Amino acid sequence: MAKTINNQQSTILITGGAGFIGSHVVRHFAQKYPHHKIVNLDALTYAGNLENLRDVEPSPNYFFEKGDIRDAVFLKNLFEKHQPDSVIHLAAESHVDRSIANPLAFVETNVLGTVTLLNAARDSWARGNSSRQPDFEGKRFYHVSTDEVYGSLGEEGYFTEETRYDPRSPYSASKAASDHFVRAYFHTYGLPVVLSNCSNNYGPNHFPEKLIPLVINNIRQGKSLPVYGDGQYTRDWLWVKDHAAAIDTIFHQGRDGETYNIGGNNEWKNIDLVRKLCDIMDELLGQPVGTSQSLITFVKDRPGHDRRYAIDASKLKNELGWEPTVKSEEGFRETAKWYLENEAWLAHVLSGEYQRYYEQQYR
Ligand code: NAD
Ligand code: TYD
Image (cartoon, rainbow, N blue to C red; front, side):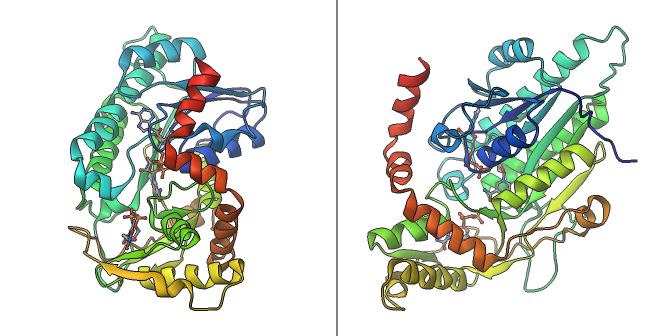
């Protein structure tokens, strides 16, 4: 039976809302649900940037709180202050290469941070209940996760919700652990949780360490385009605003304890994707076709590099009616244009300047 979250006024706590996907989720919810209070909790790490939300900041239903999901005391106070009815949890360390360099940071934020947040939600929501068995009616903890928990595919096949977990990078291992904790809180404490595992996202506000924004930015600067290994690695790319819409659908209609896979039905081998981005950029910059492709450089492979990810999102389509809407050609072009039109944003996130902006605005 589908659970429908109450459409009356409620408070939704979104973690990681200053990051790439989180900022699109915050905007989507703040604009679509003006009767809900949206609280964005973010530690503003290198990946979090309040400039992503400049247009949302004036909305009367939007609130920002700087804080760390690993900090239990901060979370207790936050839950007391805002009394959220639900949580959409996106805060995480998200880059595979960084996880290879520093796995512990991923355990601390993605595993310990998630469990600390689960405890805060459970404690706060159970407090109002007098019975031994808390009644979590009207509450929901939505955990946003990745398809990388399923491991690596060969040329054929797709990840379904039944695919066995087989994480192979420190990032995916930390996300897999957090998924297991979220499910454990459902089974052990009856906390009403729902999860989604999504493929690679792309679009505006993507930090330029990930493949697509890195390639666009390097072309802008005439720098080489590093392609790991043989470039034959495959990812399924999803337009980030389609992901935000999927999260909305699952948040409102998903069943407690269930997991939904989200994908773009849009597989690209890395080298083909990089070449496509080169051609789009040549066109947008008015340069001869082939100019940007000359920057492609094959470099040393990522250790433990997963060969292919591909999502079967038929459960989400059949049960809840969600499908991706943006075609990749159109989405890649939009993304490239956005980066060309937002050079100040790029300069800012790469300089760490926005952290100083925060200090000026909010201290
Ligand atoms: P991101 O790195 O752009 O943003 C992460 C945000 O979390 C940042 O704003 C950062 O400041 C914040 N944060 C980090 N540590 C924190 C902490 N300890 N306390 C509070 N805030 C903290 O990440 P993203 O790409 O937007 O990914 C968001 C979520 O979606 C992650 O959980 C990620 O695993 C998941 N996901 C991402 C993708 C993708 O393609 N990017 C795909 C599937 C799932
Ligand atoms: P990335 O954007 O880091 O996402 P993920 O590792 O989570 O899938 O990388 C996407 C693909 O692009 C992945 O196969 C690694 C590859 N890649 C490169 O070839 N060169 C690069 O500079 C980067 C950052 C990634």
